[in-house]
Amino acid sequence: MKYKLTPMAEEDFGYIEKKIQEVIQAADPGQIEKKEEEFVLKIENDAGEIIGGCIARLFCSDGGQMVLDTLWVREQHREQGIGSMLLCEAERIARELGCYISCLYTLDFQARGMYEKHGYAAFAVLEDRPRTHEVYAMSKRLDRVARDYVPKNHCADMPYIIKRGNEKDARMIAAGLKKHDDFFAPSLHGRIPLCRKLVDSRGNLVAGVIAGVDGWDGCYIADIYVEELYQKQGLGSFLLAEVEREAKKQGAYILLTNANDDNVGFFIRNGCSVAGVLKDFPKGHCSYELMKRL
Image (tube, rainbow, N blue to C red; front, side, top):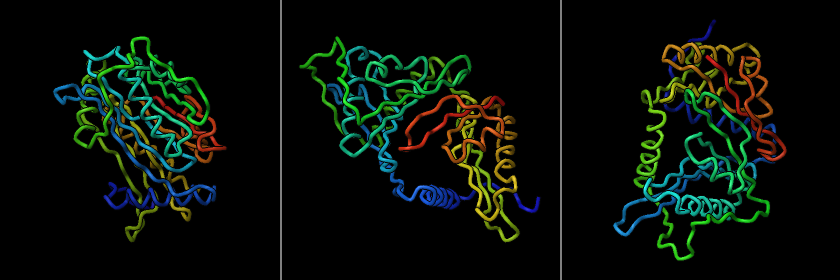
């Protein structure tokens, strides 16, 4: 191969993200530039300690999507409707900002039942992830009228109020959820980045992949990009194979990614199977959850 494989530099990440957005807009001119906003919600006790919170990201494109990254309630305060309060408030904010859909991932030892009561449905199941467990990809339309779920143990005079949080609060909320998760499926190690690029003789990027191995030995592919001039030469498949090879060396046993109508075929041709389909996201299209055993 006439190209050189090297680790990605910091500036490469922004470049690839920009180029992928240009490709998306060229394929669908009606789409606006992707804008991401994160917000944190928290609930404190009388001592000012956080007893529950959530972290969500809003993507103000494709009509608007909320991704609920984290929702956690301290153990002694569970079964009091606090999780429902946080979820409903996050959805309210998302609707006000124009989001039409909410998506999340939850594990079999987390809160699938609560989400289902609030109208979420699983559109994909990732089996043996982490080992002996399952991950559910769930979604809910926010632009359709639905009766709000109110927990039986929820009191109208509940002494808690929801506040906006900051980055420090987000770290505490994420740490609380991690401690809970580690009880059921301990992390094996920290995240291992596997971002690689192919460069030509002048050092110019011709293709790149953003990927990594998480603490549960799963390899996640975030993006694969090939410059238009160099497409249909097998460079994307070469990069994917290189990431798989390195991921297996690091102990990964499963590869995970998501795709859209335009690139799902690439992953299927490279051995991935479709675990589930989210219809009408982006609007008029589909999003696919894919996995491959390594």
